[in-house]
Length: 370
Image 1 (cartoon, rainbow, N blue to C red):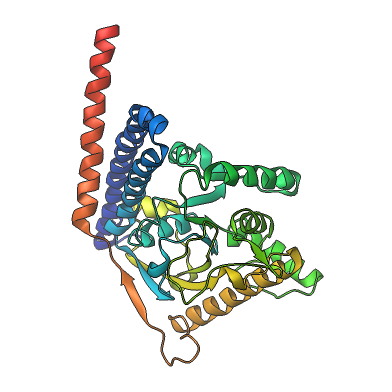
Image 2 (cartoon, one colour):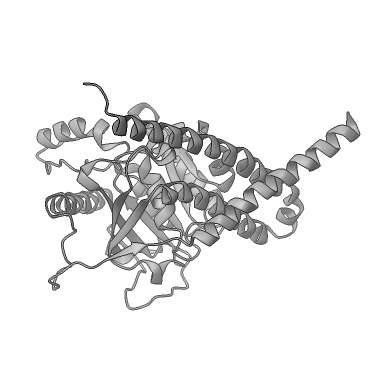
């Protein structure tokens, strides 16, 4: 069927916008990421004299880089609506974050919705698939101290050993607080069939909107970073205290990401903005670490139950367009997560100004020595 003139104009505008956004984001990466690396090279004497100050500065720049990614979606009208528990009161405390994983856009969504949660973004550590190491942002994550994990049975034991070693070396020394992982170990569309077959074989819950989580990384994190164990559980995380002196994990934050009409958003959509403006919904549920079992079998059951709850949350959302209210309440309350456009503009301006400055500095030294 032939396109009408109006449809042709609309398609042309979408294509033009996608091309212009792609060009801008390539330029954004070409100035922001090298500037981040060069600033840190120059600051190496600070790292030797006062590593805490160095990683504080690095964390601030890391947050700015993630804000740039957030601005790409924000400018396209991709916003976030938040539900459930308020995580701001515990934003300065150590926590492990578990989230469902549907597409590459999940990471971008978390980058956006955590921007206004105190120092969370600059002090967080990510666990992500090893393929991410080879993307444009891989070098930044490598420097920041994120962990790239290789999936598959053949690599599992070695990867868990490397993860424990990584946590021992970098988590406390770089003053990290929140550690984010996707326990499903892959995208929903890729793992759903395998997960359902596994569930049927072992008489486990049958899930459609999430998959059964894998235990390895979660168990390593809890055992490596949790407070002293008490009666098979982790000590700490008293809900009556908003501040803790413990250096160990105090909370588990369960994040459930839901997309409108169950259509996940990938990084290509985030960059090119060929989808109409849409709202992604993020639900938070907080658990004190003392309520989390540490032994393998109880922990497995506990984590399975979290994903059964995610299944129920998502089923309710896709049926009604809203998450269910907390127990004892008649209606769920949501809040739109907002970013300051002036702040985003200033960060983008700083990135391009830094790129221009470093270009001139490197050009000067090139002429001097060559």
